[in-house]
Image (cartoon, rainbow, N blue to C red; front, side, top):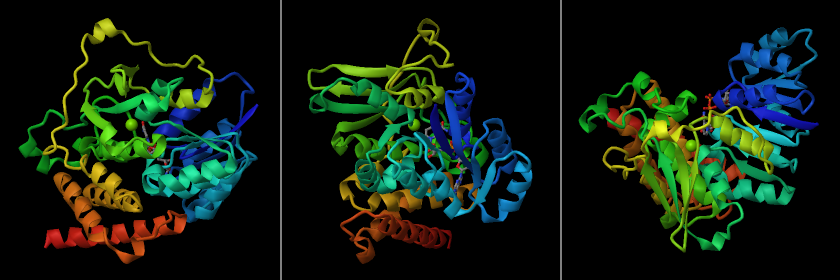
Length: 391
Ligand code: NAD
Ligand code: MG
């Protein structure tokens, strides 16, 4: 019986993971810890159904409501940042890292410390602290398996290949909610409009990041951190059907494409069953019905956030932590109606520029402390730039 934990169990990735666990043969898994945020009802329901040992909410003030919701179930309740770390450290063979944002970094690191498998959906932790994550995994003898669909695709396309023979990698993007909207109208794009994805059903933040392509920028950096590609080996193509998730190109001219329906249970299930391939509840593709697969180069005027990924990769060091935090804060402002959709990239770029030579960020080593410092400064700077623009 494998012990598993899910960090961010109440979210979109968390719920898809539980769907797979629910379908597994009786006794295949024992659920150690489930964590969530404000949705106590969902967290308690899942903890009861899966007989979790412990359920933890990220919010201190929700400990009592969570205890009440778990009364009589035998499931332990916890709340707050420390309890999240304790949950991540509870022995598990396989942990899903599916908290959204930089908040997923510390719990992800704690889970890696156990030396098991970390299924990584939380791309922000690799963007902000890739070298730290990879080092922690190496030292603890843990394995990180990618769950982001593009990175799972690359991982699968690389199986059995010599990494020296790789010449390029192409990550596809759906183009998001505004792919076909006239550029001049994007300035007025609303939060509700940006929160609708044409192909994938995901959490709100990643859905808006897909419309702006901040998500693709994160994924480009994630590919560099995880696989070690050079920045100029990584390409992005818009592929509106979201059927091909990534392609790996080799020096002999061949390209290996990973093809599948836009259903995250494939990538989650692959990481859950790896190194085996087991049956998954994923619809077989009817390629004749799909008929065609289109590809276009992304227009930098429409997606100004995308190019920032190369800026960040070339800068190195803590630029990833600055980029991710500034992006998260810009998104907070957009969701709150304080910043326009097309303003976010310019604000994040201004933060990258203003912190490039900051003495506190010249740290040669990437540790949880230096990443937190960079994250904090970036959020402060983003607020300052947002206020300046509004004046
Ligand atoms: P979501 O918003 O649906 O769920 C996020 C989860 O994190 C919830 O359980 C929430 O309670 C928890 N959470 C939020 N803020 C927190 C905090 N400050 N501290 C602790 N927990 C907190 O998000 P999602 O779409 O499931 O995405 C989760 C992660 O997976 C993100 O990093 C995202 O980029 C990545 N990802 C998601 C998809 C997808 O299909 N949804 C695909 C690829 C990658
Ligand atoms: Mg993705």
